[in-house]
Image 1 (cartoon, rainbow, N blue to C red):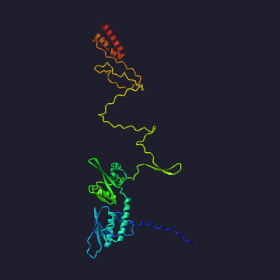
Image 2 (cartoon, helix red, strand yellow):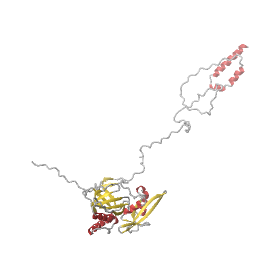
Image 3 (spheres, rainbow, N blue to C red):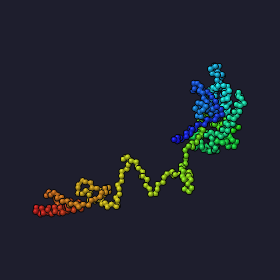
Image 4 (cartoon, helix red, strand yellow):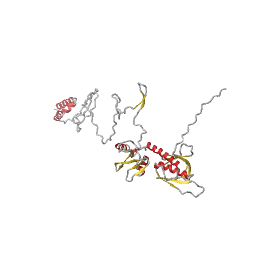
Length: 404
C-alpha cells in the first residue's frame, strides 16, 4: 500500500539580519530610566539600533546621533560589584549613559561614534591598528551613503522656483534646500516667513568643503551632512523654520487604464479636464424659476386693476346705476372707477308701475305742470311714468270742470 505524501512545507522566510558598522552588547540608561538595560546594539549611519538579542532583526529602540555634542568618560567605579566601564553620550536635548564590560569595548564604541559623526578616524583613543582599519572602512561607507542621501526638503530647483514653491504651498513648510548657482557643488538655503503681513524671503549659502558643509553666516558653522544643515536652521530659530515637504501622495490628474483598439496593448489615458460648469443641452429641461421671497403687507404696493382681455367678450353693465329720481342721494359721477364685471344676459320681467298717491284738491295745476316740465330726466330714465302723469292731469281737469 503506497503512502500518500502531503505537500512539502516550505520554510517561513526569515528576516535578514541588519548590517552595522559596529555591533556589540551595550547597557543603556536614559533620562527616564531608573537602571541600566542591556541590549544588543548596532551602529548604522547616524543611528544606534537596540535589539533584545543578537538574533533579532527588528529593533526595539533607536537613538539618533544628529544632535551630537560630545562624548565624556566617567570615573571608574571603586566598587568590586560593578567592574564595568562607563561613558556618557551628550546630545542637545538629552544625555544617555552607557556601560560596557571592558575598556577596549568602550574605546571601540567611542571610536565608531566619532567616526560617523565627525567623518574622520579619531586619533586620541587607545586603539589597535586593526581597530583603526575597521573605522576607516566604516568612514568610507558613511561617506558613500551620505553622497547618495539627501534630506526630503532638498529639491533641484532654481532660486525663483524655490520662492514660488514656498509662496504657493505655505502649509508644506518654509525652509528649502536647493543646488547653489555658483556651480561649485555647494547648497543654498531659501526661507520664507511673514512679518506683519509682508513676506520676508532669505537666501543662505552653504559651502561644500571636502566631506563637510559650512554654513556661510556671521560665524561659519561646519556640518557633517545636509541633514545637519537643516537641523542647524531649525534648532537656531526655535523651530520657527519647518523643512519643506511637498505632499505628492495624491494625484492631481484623473486617469485610467484602457486597451488600445489596434494592438490590444494597455495604455494609461488621461481625459481632458471637464468644464467648470455643465452646459445644459438645447432640448433639455429648463432651469427652475427663482423663488421670490415673501414681502410684508406694509411694504407691498396695492395691486393695480387688470386691463380687460380683448379675447374675452365681457360686457360692461350700464343699467345698474341707481335711479336719479331719489332725493338727497349721491349720483355716481362718470369719473368714478367702475368695477368691470361681466353681465349675465337674462330676460327681466317688467316691473309694475308705481301708482302715485292722489294729491289733495288744493293742489294747483301750475305746480303740477312745473313738476312735469322739470322732470325730463326722470321721464327719460322711467318711460312708464309719462302715462301716469297724463292720466292724473286728465282727472284734475275733469274735477275742475265739475266744480265750475
